[in-house]
Length: 223
Ligand code: AMP
Image (cartoon, rainbow, N blue to C red; front, top):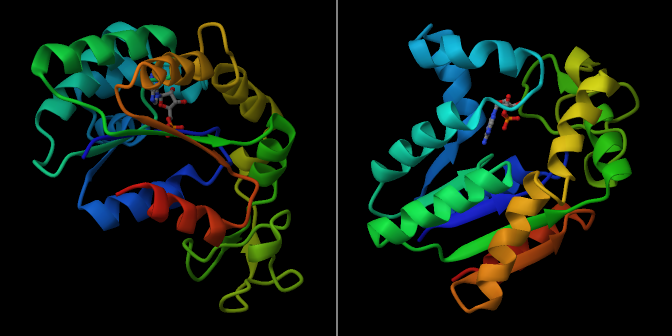
């Protein structure tokens, strides 16, 4: 099973992606994570990508596209969940062409929909627990609201990540995501059109719904 997942930063894409990965034993392929690993390993690829990532820009297509397509070719036989790629229309077209050439298919494309304002609030509302960074706390999401100033899971002290409060950085990322002409939404709609031609299913979900409800819908729809 091969799945593409789209969603703006702040939409809970990571959480929902983990769920699908677990359920179907998929390789979770995250372009951002591949870059980060290469940067910490100081590889040639990492050196090329570093300045773009640090300034919040997309790494150029001539670096990103071959890197991701190569990882896909070596993915598990169970299939993959691709997250963070494609981020623009060119990446979308090349991905589709490459899959056709290899006789590979996509089973589902998921789009987590969230308005830009809510996505931004959600990022700025994230709080990190000193005891465990995986304890979910967000002052703007009812289901995971902290207990006052403390972690809802363990009462640990909370803090906010500096980059989660950097409005310019958030806006820059969202400018790329919400661009329907050539950006990430354009890439999503490229696949939506292919789905309408009957190639696979395109599932749009309201990411502002309750987290558990989104999970249930996903698990029900994807078989
Ligand atoms: P992410 O963890 O998905 O937010 O990605 C972190 C950074 O990696 C992004 O801000 C980009 O600089 C870079 N990146 C990740 N995926 C892509 C992609 N598909 N195309 C270009 N750059 C990417």
